Every structure is written in C-alpha cells, then in structure tokens.
Image (cartoon, rainbow, N blue to C red; front, side, top):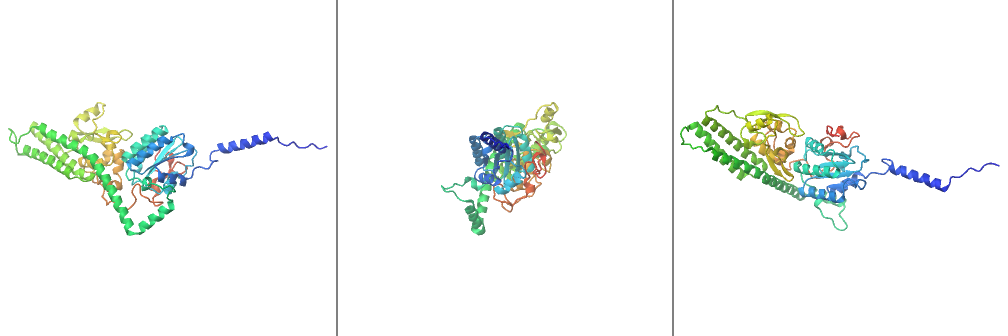
Length: 454
C-alpha cells in the first residue's frame, strides 16, 4: 500500500505566508515610495513636506513652524523630509521639474542632507557652503539652521500658490493652468503680472535699503565724530593751503555722504555714500600726517574688517571660518591683533538671526562694501563668503546693483525666471544641479557641482 503524501498543516502554511509578508514589507524598495509628483504637488501648496514614512524625523508642529517662517520671509525655499530608502537618482532635478517653481530645494533623506538651487536664487557655491555648515545635526536642528541661514542670503519671492486660499471643494490644478494660460495669452494679463513683479521687487529693495540705512547712518555719524575730534581750524597757526585743502575735502565728503543717503531710493545708491566717506577719511589721514610732520600716506583701501577704522596700512593674512586664506587690507590696530593671534575687530550688523559680520548679512551689503573697496579688489576679499557668492551672479546685479563695479546691470523683468516664478520644465538642469548619488550628484557626484561634504 502506497504511503499517502503528508499535507502541510494549516499552521505551517500560515507561518510561511506570514514570513513572506514580513520579508516583503522589510525589503528595501518593496513598498512604493511616495511619487515625486505627490511631493511636488504638496510643495506647491506648502514649503515643507514630510513623508509619512519619515514623520519620526520632524514633527508636524516643527514642520508647521518652518513653513510659517519661510512664508513670512517670502522666499522660494522648499524642504522635503523623506525616508532613508527613498530612490535618490535625479531626485532634485525630477522634483524641480515636477514642482515647476524656481527656487532653493533642500532634502533631508534619512540622516543625509543636501540642497540644490537655481542660480538666480542662490549661487552653487553658497548652497554648498550652507549645506556643509549644517552637516551632522539632528533633523530639527539641521533644517532650522539651514532655513535661518538660507532665508538671509537667498533671493526671489515665494510662489503665489502658497498664499492662495482654497474653497471647500478646492481649485483643480488644471483649472489654474488654463486660467494662467488665458491671462498670459492676453496682453492685459501679462501687463498685470509684470507690474505685480516690479511692485514686489520695489518693496524688497525698499526693505533692503531700510536695513542698510541703519549701517550707513552709523558710518556717517562716526565720520562726523572724527571731524569733531580733529579740532582743526583753517586760521590756526601752521595751517597752510595743503592742510586747508585736506580739511575742506573732508567736510565736502561729509556733506555729500549725508545728501547721497537722503536721496537714496535703492540699495545700489548707497555705493556713492560709502565712496564719499572713503574719500573723506583719506583726506583726514593726509591732514593728520601734515600736522604731525609725517610722510603722506599712500592711497590704500580702508580696513577690511571695519571701514570705520580708516585707511589700511598693510595687508595681512586672514582666513574666514570655513574659507580659504587670503590677504586683506587692515588698519594698524587689527594688524597687531592678527600678529598676536587675536581676532580682529569685525564690523557686525543686525540681521533677522542676530548680529553677524557684514559679509555674512545678506546681498544688500554689496553696494555698501563696493563703495569702500572699489577698483575690483572686492571679489578677492570676499571669495568664499556668502556675500561674495551672491555678488558673483548676474541676478545680483539686477536686484542690488553693480556692487563693486565689475558686473553689468539689468532691467528687472527683462528676461528669465526669478525665484518663485513658475517656469515648469523650462530650466537648465546643469544650472540647477543633480541629486542624491546614483549619478545625481550627491556625495560629490557629477551633475550637482557639489564637491563633497558627505
């Protein structure tokens, strides 16, 4: 009699099925990742997206706080928090294409972090510096620090979709696209859009000038106090035409600086103010040398660390935090401090995120510095700093003027897409950068011009 084959017991079959389910769930990539289209749709409505599978990294409250900060700053900063196993190939380029908005995109992927931006919003070198500055931090700290620093230095404006309110049934994307197409097709719609952009640009310039005015007024006041301390009288004993000429040029510079500032309407107008102050301080240095019987000083730029220190007397080696060494013009006091291994006295200014050196305080300070350091020397002094990175782009000239005179200007709205504008897929992937590895540029790979850091 043949043996009847044993049939597997029900518990054994259930165990096998359960094992299969567990293996399937735990296998990386087995579960479909959230599509780029879904993430892009969320980012068009809100600047911060947290994938459900990554919710443990950033709480809903913390995400909402970041989103409110970004919206309040009116900047096109997009943040996505994704799980560690999310596919990384071309993720930045694909997300930028799907979102269709010119801006700065940052992704926290597991415990890895990277960012990419259209150069009209933030230069690649500035993005690189910002990303490097927050590596190794926890998700909340990293994203908060990155947001703080990025909003200080990036350009552009928030997309209109963030501020739109939806009805109970919502407004379909298709309807919005059709409406936009009709408006663009009509001359009246296009004219309205240009006027709105120019009005927003003018408001941003006024805000930048208001912040800059505080610093310039401090400079003018300091120069006026120098004139008072000089205690020079054109009729005093020993006064001659040369000394009187120095004194008159200093007084003229003081008057010009006050008038130029009173007439300033945009940040680039400030350059004329600081040029006048630099001329005036050199005249005072000449007058002091004549009165003391010393050789006349050579014409040198002011002290790099604080132009209020007066004309520099030498060049000294200095390395900014996280930057490369360079020679900068310094006053005698700062030269001594550096030689003794001490920190120089640096000009700090108020920002939304506390007191910072002027070269780390935003693009509006470019024309201010350019008036002091003319003649093309400023790029070398600021290389590797955030202000230097921002000033090295044509978009900077359009927003804040020529700065140090080496870039051509440009009319606002004369072409291209500004940060926050809808460009769809009309952007240069090489300009924007790549993605997280797998040929996308993460870990210093190609396409993203990232240069390492992980």
